[in-house]
Length: 261
Length: 325
Image (cartoon, rainbow over all chains, first blue to last red; front, side):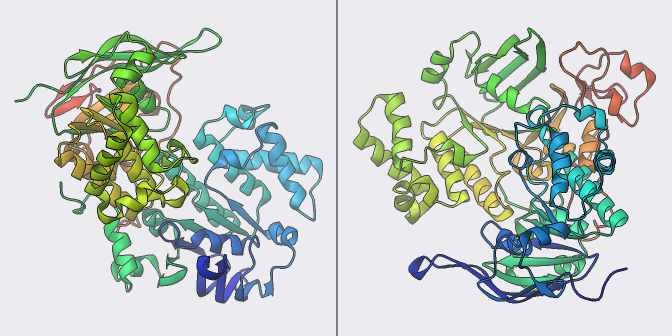
């Protein structure tokens, strides 16, 4: 049952870094609600503050001012928060320890849970997670992260999510390191997460094509502010902000003029 | 008709592993390029794109070895030369490479102008002061009034786009015949990507380099950047034609599948689901009989697994499939 309380609720959230002359307002007065079971994408160029916002959602940063609530309460204990909110990142190779087998690390992920399942159930759930991303458990048996390709490793990150089944997933550029083929694959799995586990997913990406395809709602971010928000078709067809117009204009689409040589 | 600036004849490359195993990463690649041409090469991760780049520079550092074939720049062969010889006489002057990670390509402890001046001094044994003057001129071409600030900055003080443009500037300092760009924009956001591509076009128009190979897996980007596109699969070219032909009317089943996996933010595309290609490319350690794509091909016939497919002219372009439509 989707609950009434929004998963995330932000009111005038500001996060600044540095001070004096070097002060940077990475997130500058952002307000939004994200409902249970919704897929929201935060899109923007490099340095627009989207990753900082993702880290606020993960409880890794606290807002400098403003209010940021998860299910109606402030994020105080990170470990508690990570029971329900988990992330996938851009570079899977920097997410896994090279010295331990992948299976051991997938199992170790369960340490974050308060109600830890039994040993055999953990094994079962890791197997199920691997199968969910089309990897036979025996294929990674005894293998270390460096023995897999980039696409396979990105799937291991997702297998971890399928095994842990968090309530909320924050995906920070999950596909920017992989080729188009693997990207289509990963999107399939993410859609499966939504359908099978009714997970709330927040995508953080600079790829507006990806965002358009997966999300229920799009936020366009620029210089720390949300400049455009709404259903994907509305944002793409009737952009209200010059930033969105430029972002759309800069994508190389096959049917559209881009740069003339 | 000008002579081809760059010729590749039946180039095959292999890696020799610690266990004495040969991995045939690139098999029988042939093409030639004319002045002013941009050739795009696309394919999945691990299809041999980056191995091919090393081969095209003649830079064979173990475990990579040439199997057979020839690469010629302006008529001069790059094969059977030591890495030392290649570095002194070919790299930067004749063939230059633009790497993917601009951050890793620049020494963080030195200013951009020093990194760049080293290239000029090392290759032309010239005066360092003159080198700085030349740098100023060249960087003003594409950075305008910003040139001075960028030259005097350390890499960390620049944005990702400025760094990548500096790397391109440095790679093309000695006016190479040929520039090979290996995913030059995949780490950048779309707006920065556009600025970088614009700069590449400007350099080509100004005659600073003569032709370019652009490697990426973003086919929509290639349609705007490249004149011709070659699609690579498991170390082979499977289709080569003009950018329009490949993007709008792909003929090889693999090219079609790649196009099907593309995402796009064009209105009305939301219902069109990108389709991933199931399965994985074949192991290149073993000899492969038959078509390399057969195991994943949606329209494969039993005979595809037995008959070797040749790259041949099919109507308007080269296709490696007997049953292409």
